[in-house]
Image (cartoon, rainbow, N blue to C red; front, side, top):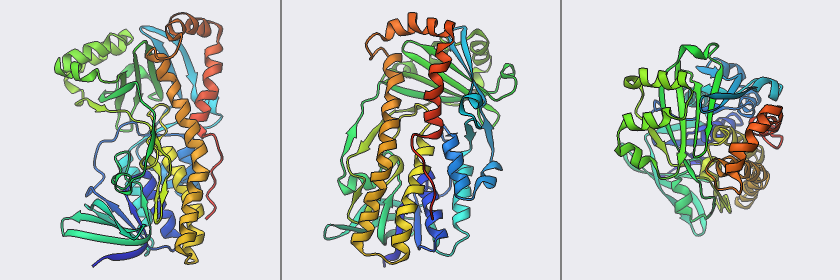
Length: 408
């Protein structure tokens, strides 16, 4: 027998867990479905920007967020090979706190624990959604597998927050605008090197066809994101971990290259992120709304995924809570869902456009990229202009391009 609630949310990531919390706090019956039985998995790129921290504060969870395992980044040093180009004081540029590298499992457990304080909140773990349930043209629920067998969950609205490989996106037949990406990311961790000093400094290594970002993680290790041309990791992997480590070290400063070689036996297994970036033409269908990566997978440039997802959830709550609390009609619910896309799409579009620019220069896809990296960039660094140009770029990624305020 189907369980019937007002809202069924598929995917307990940042978007789904935060929206479920906000709806339940407003007294709306919500069931949150998560295919994993726990959140004890390693996530990569766990950057919470000031816009994401602000979202938690607006939800009344700022103090709880502060108690989670995290490292804070106050400065970024930019290198080209062994040469340090400049140091960017992130907090000075932002006029506020810098990014946090936070444990996403702990963050998600916080959100579902806060949601569980309300009787209208229900979390179902170990539930894998396979398809949507329709009544005519309207989505009225989902079909799922669980340890108890096949199950059906019905609601007045189904919300897909099931990530960039969204089942609901496919089953609903929603179409996307694709933005081909020139790069992939290899993630790994090593022991934190002592020469990073205050443990609040990140390093970025710039070279044509290569970019490496390294920052202290919340678990007292060094998180490494090695950005390489799309499709070339297979060959590196076939040559073995020693080979790809040597290749990466060739583009780093001597101190960090030596540290990697000294700790090669302690490097976690490299994980390849196949970078995708796209955006649904329509985030909605009758009875269905998609937000977060399910609607618009973000490029990892600028660490935007979690932050945009949280902002999506706040806007969704603003539009959905009023109509759901007054038992609005199906048409009113659909109209509210459409307003979510109307409000969020401009920021998503702008951020995604900005995310495309650095890789085009780095991988020579933009006209004059070689001249820029070899001639123009050094001149900009020498004159101090580079730091001033990067500041506005950093601020847009840190704080967003529109104002988002929780109103419910």
